[in-house]
Image 1 (cartoon, rainbow, N blue to C red):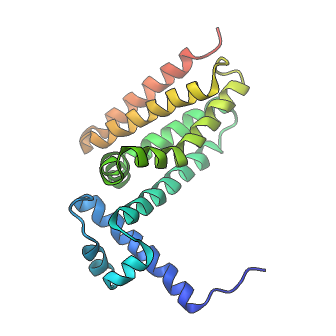
Image 2: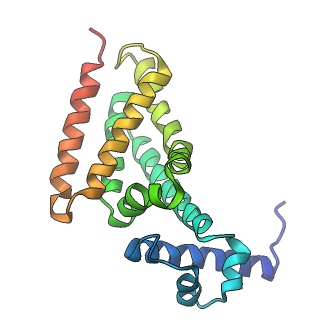
Image 3: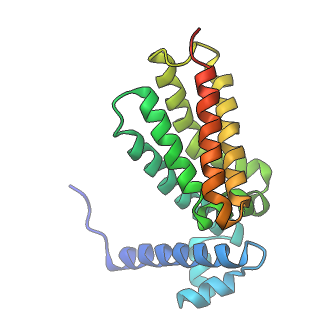
Amino acid sequence: MSAVKSRREQYSEATRAALLETATALFAERGFAGTALEDVASATQVTRGAVYHHFASKRELFEAVLEALEITAMGRVASAASEATDAWEAALIGLDAFLEQCCDPVYGKLVWQEGPVALGWDRWKQCEEKYAYGLTEQFVRSLMDASYIQQSPMELTTRFLFALLGAMGSSLADAKEADKPRVRDECATLTRRLLSGLRPH
């Protein structure tokens, strides 16, 4: 039986959620460097102390925003792929869902453009691997198990495809809005060709 949360706990959770929502919008609009914790506090209508109660620094707040974005994005990819009838279809549907997510201006800017700047390359890479690497590995393992792609070292194959997905995410984030549909389709076509090249001979 789950414990009933106190009003203070409910308020604390609501405040944290509101801070994340506000910070996401401000980081997307102004970038990490152009956003101060005072801006987030003011826009959320809380004190600066309330912000520090949940987040020790602007960097920690940004990381929480990034994590929330990735949890949502990878959840959508996994959910879309779960509707497929086999591993090959699941991989392609998951790919399309990922590329579509990367076309989102908020996700694209914060994950691919602001993330490395705000967190530093090493920490940003760790965050990306935490949420996306495992899902990539699942797709690769499923494709190998179903003999859609040839058996090869799992870690090397996963890292190769993980890096490829990262390159496509960055390309979509950098593309102009009018060009995103074309770049998305080009990325999808290229990845399908590469996966087809990994099929057993």
